[in-house]
Length: 376
Image 1 (cartoon, rainbow, N blue to C red):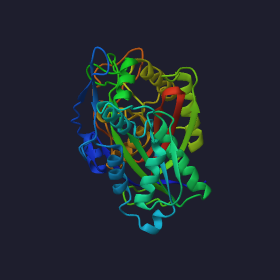
Image 2 (image 1 turned 60 degrees about the vertical axis):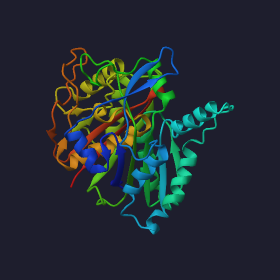
Image 3 (image 1 turned 90 degrees about the horizontal axis):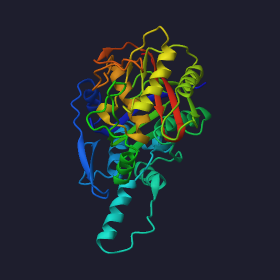
Image 4 (image 1 turned 135 degrees about the vertical axis):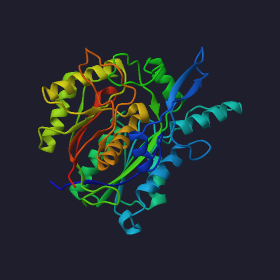
């Protein structure tokens, strides 16, 4: 099977813009949540979130996407871009932009219905035209696993010979509808996101655009021998909003089998900080580890849960930290949960080259697991 590697990346997220800012934000976190008041709800509620570094007045989806893609493509010539496919992963695409159109129409006393939503397809067309990407355009929406599935499809396209390289963009700009929806499910933390902690009480959403070029060249502009070794995808129908421990463990095993390995050196957990989801994932991870200790971390307390973008953003995050020889800590974790039986890293830990398992679980049971190998 043709090996596929991470080659270059671009990021705009709460940690800042660029791979260096991402690495620094994870290894020396100073994340502080912002708050938004949703007056559409009666009574009004205030919810936490982690916005991306501001690029323009509105932090629009197009502005975030353009910045991340521009950074990822710096080293690629027009000729290379002409045979580069574009995969966009998002759970809501430009929903925040549609909200602004709706709000402006209502303010003018005009009918705001039907609510026209161009979606990720139009965004893909605009980006492809702007950056000269001629290898095809694809959009993926499998909730919070969108990014990992986009990486899987991109790797498959390269192996089939459909394109020479692929650009994968994970994009999420949580709008008021998104925030109100998560609030209605009572999933927001009222203090701090603390994955796997005994007193965890919910998640915090984040805003991000993360772009990565994947290629058959093992030495890219930003990454050296960082291989997408294997992956697996499955739909767990046991629940609409969270995964089942047995299904999660089975999928982790499938990903390892696809990669041709039995053991990894670290695990990047999905780790949302919600009681049910963390409990199921912890059970799956501890069952896999058995008696062998493997360092586990979750980075959502620092970057937020970026929904459809997290598969790309968190894969890049692990890659940049790993190249620095480190695995970031799980910020906010204080007290082990005896029922979960899993204690994630509480401090930055040295991590030599090897293999890592990365979990991504989404609403609707749309789950994906990736095995990443670093062998410089």
